[in-house]
Image 1 (cartoon, helix red, strand yellow):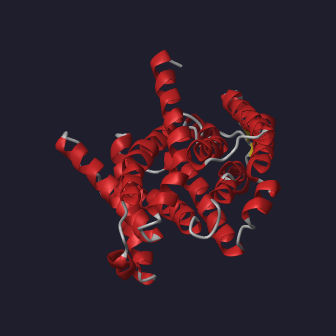
Image 2 (cartoon, rainbow, N blue to C red; image 1 turned 60 degrees about the horizontal axis):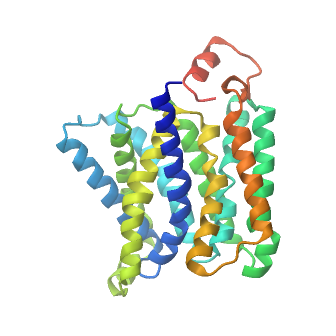
Image 3 (cartoon, helix red, strand yellow; image 1 turned 90 degrees about the vertical axis):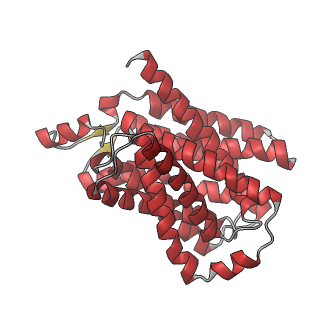
Length: 318
């Protein structure tokens, strides 16, 4: 791998790891003034619209109808279903428990190829998932649950559906026709997701609530952070990584994000960093290393390595 490409991949991973880990706090603050679906709709329409306008001004070609269809699928699965689940559930459950359910994304990304394509995860990936989940359970598991209250059933179901949708969308992304520009693809997906958010906004009657809400400076600042960093920077980096490396590697963000959330809680919420947090962090980082350092050809095992499967593996969809 060229050194310049390796550097870009590392920078993109840093954006996804750190920025998305901080969005839990941003969502919590933004919900002080914005209803959940309005928060998602405003966030993605502004972010997607701004990015799309900038790219068109710089001479980017208009997307084709097929590319818009692909963007609707990916934006609907990852940004609409995935983020709507997180935003809505953050009203009803502690952020640590929300992050625990979201961390099932790597599990779904390992299971779905087996279910859909009969490809079994390699031992290194299975070991990495096991170690990572052990660390996450230690980080925000039973002890944290007793201290902060149990996860309500409905938010847990909503988060699980959203995590499954995000994982499926991530696996489908390399197979769909999208613009060559990853920035344009990200803008299109955000615009499609923002448009889809209008359905629950209207269905749940959020517009009157939004009009009557008291908009606080902290909520506005959090919204701006989510738009610029969580959406434009973070999701653009994620979308690019899906084409530059493997889904198994990209999914490791779910192991690191809870660490960032805990550190932000310590820095801004007065939360202590205990020995349990340090040990669980070591397990999570070890899991990231297991999955990331696994040889590319060994990340999945296909029962019948026919030519069709080899071609798809070359496109990093395995």
